[in-house]
Image (tube, rainbow, N blue to C red; front, side):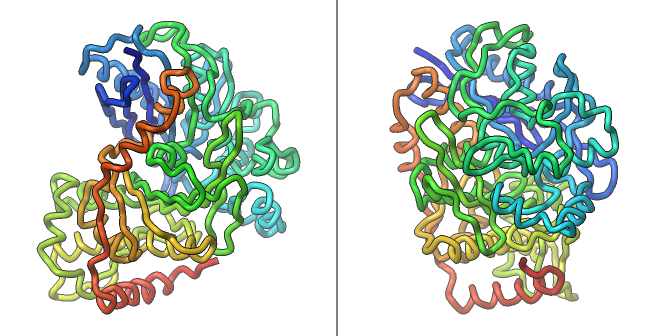
Length: 487
């Protein structure tokens, strides 16, 4: 029996997953770590926190099962994508990682727009000039600390690969590179013109490779033996798209994690959105490159976490569903989950979270329901924009930790008026990377197991009346358009 290990390095924790050659999950472990907030709107991670979470999650995964490290035939890595690392040839970080949620390069984005570069970046990369992406984070770092230009850049996948191969391989894959504002979407190569505008030297960048191949082998680690092939690198949202079986044009998924990320597979040609959505690489293999249209909400599950930790109204995240079900609706209350600005389709980095419509009758159950409604309503705005760009949306596959909330997914089905299929495996991000690593090493010969898993999904069908749906959306749009207009 052969086994594959997947490392899913996320925004708030690292998940390790072991599965056998039949895609049966043998063990899973998650190790959380803290985020660092140096200033309002700034978000960082300490390198030691991430590395220790990776190490501990892998060790704990083995402790929880009978599989031994030497039985691992391949390792897949998936990661929070735009988070930016600068490190030396020893793999040591020279600055805290700047997290994808961080807004510190907002002024740089405004400057580049004022210089007339937005259309150029849009046409070449499929992205908008927003502090979300790695490129302007690098510009900020190099302007503040010019001496950092002599070191290496990587998104989290690249940094982990470098450390796990003891500095032998400095590479990334096209899904991650397509989220940097520096890669040409058609050629999947670093673009010299964009690098020059951003002030980024090419020699600090990793090699762009496919999402499923043997990049290198483990070396000099105290938690894994030498010689295990690292055989997939893939951005977390693209990994989930693949793990949910969305591998053909027109198939869509929504992952409810820290944020919510909706991806629609667009086939072998990128689609440039007219409604503020993003175009990225869905997957690059040795055979072909496929693309996706993406809508990103920076806050989804994080709003529930904030409701628990920030407001203290519940003791566990799962309690929000029961609390929200104590009222039939949120009455006049609207919650805008702009705790880290607004992504698609509004793209307002200065927007902030809002509760509107509080009356003497408002209680904590209304707040709980408004939070879930706010997540689903913002997602529906993204789905509507996606539908305008590509045509009808037939169904939506969902996963991620917050997707375990039945009320949230039912609200999404009601608002979108399409069936939502929840995977029996909520860790499809880790699963996608695991299968890609197995395919690269011959552990798996096809994707049949992924398709069979998809067939076991729980189906949420639209139940809300048209009148109720229209009323909910009208009060939402009155509020959100009051402080943020679509591009």
